[in-house]
Image (tube, rainbow, N blue to C red):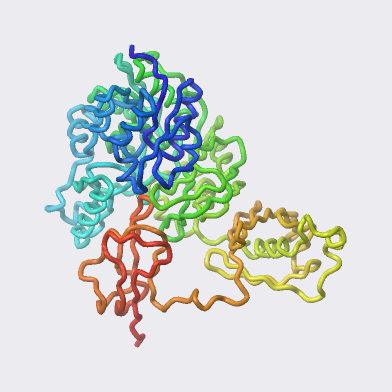
Length: 637
């Protein structure tokens, strides 16, 4: 039994750091945060008892600097380090350095991390332990019969360095791209290939082990709804699995843990084919993002158990029995309709109602920057049945007020309410089939624009009494006009404060407009941001961000036709081979690759024609709206 812990440093940021601090506080531990310069006033810093600066902004200079993290722990008097997930959480060398510094490592033994760090080496270990595997494919000798293939980075995770290849002509380029992304993300360009299973399910098993030989298998999770090989919606238990398959997954997960003398919390991930055959994917030697659904079902605090195991405590021989069903949705600052483009800027409001758990690293007024993952929050519901849990989560998200950034909230609500998801017809191709339908613009933006215009015209609360009492009787005789844009569509509202075709105005105030639309009473909550550049309208019909259109647009806002502007701040990580002014390009051809918020984004030629200007070079940092290149469209025959 080691000495009880007294002070914990979390070598991470955002929602996972806040979540770990919450448990540490409940256990009476002092807490220490580390932070980069952009995170100086972040929620995880505000939530800790003490904080240590890691000078710089990029992860490579801050959260990935193990030497600085250990120095911070020692300086702050911490006696333990919890890595969270991502960053250094699966770095065996860092784990050793923590232990060599006299600090307690809240994680598995470095040898277990090392054994599972390379997916290729991990598969060899699992094969020896009798865990079922997909046979690897040598890209150099691949034939059409081997297609489709999935290319995967041997190191790391989170969907980085992964590509699906459906024709041999694109294999070489896909290998190059996957390897380049893996080097950028993990410092290791090793890539391997295996068969890509169409309509497979991503099912995983949570395990927890102590130093006394006890290994718990804490049920299954389904994580099949993914974008870019990154999970979006997770649930526990995985629905619709036969008991025999469920037991075989538990057995294989425990065998995997015992094969590397595992200790602490970890996850063994499997691919389950449409006909029910399971194959080992990888073992994550850390806490998973989706761990809250397992906590809800088993009534456990996995972070508290991690800390107790690290102190040397023994687990009971058997875990508690699970109850009910839990579902988690990851709320991202991104635009699913624009190739999942991440968003940056001020998050003015984040308010999620209902009896749900919200793990977040942000509050209203915080800024979402360019350097880190764009996840805003994890929202978790738990109920006696799957249908009730799904319904509660969808209702909470639909009623949320999220202002300032485009998010995937509408996509999450649509996914949870989709007939396939409701019927538990789950597979990793869900968004390949349904993304277009799930990202269609909601049809009621015109009504939202009307509510925004009425709120704008309403007297202020501090207006003279006569103006407020006169309200909607003492008005101009001619209709007024306002214009707004929403999701690329412009809406012109001609309104009169008394008469509106098909709509009856019941009341209109600066922040709340009540309308009777087609005989149904609706309330519209209206809020403007601080500089009046956006209007946010929330109602039971949906949420809309409206941009008022100025009556006289600024001529400087116009750009040369064919201009390619940076859709976000980021780093140019690649320029297409041979691309230079004068090059002929074809519509949709990738010209540049921009990395921002842990994701890589392709900048495509908007039309076929000639590249007349190229302002981007590899390694260049660019701001939002920066001119990257110009393509002059070729004349149509």
